[in-house]
Image (cartoon, rainbow, N blue to C red; front, side, top):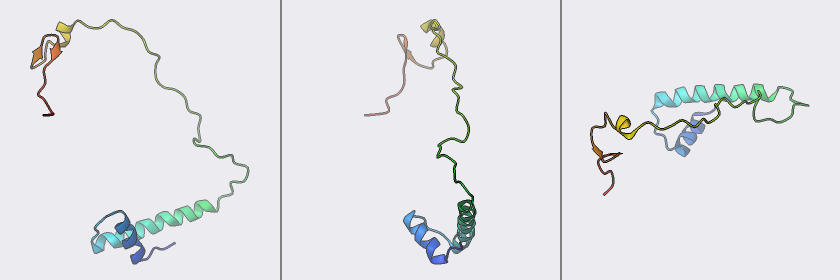
Length: 95
């Protein structure tokens, strides 16, 4: 499906994009190619294929939580540029 120049400009207007003439021509070609690929995919027979969100089985790759003792505050704050007691001191970001 070939998009017209006006359709590309309409899409750009909806997306609030300002395009140069060269960009319009480039996007016209790229978007037309994308739509042609979707037309090819629509011709694929999918009868008997159940709808799915994932094509492969998902597995959890996270390790289980383990409780470890904390490091002493003096060690954590050893390289802090500014500190106040056992806390990091940072400049205020809000008034």
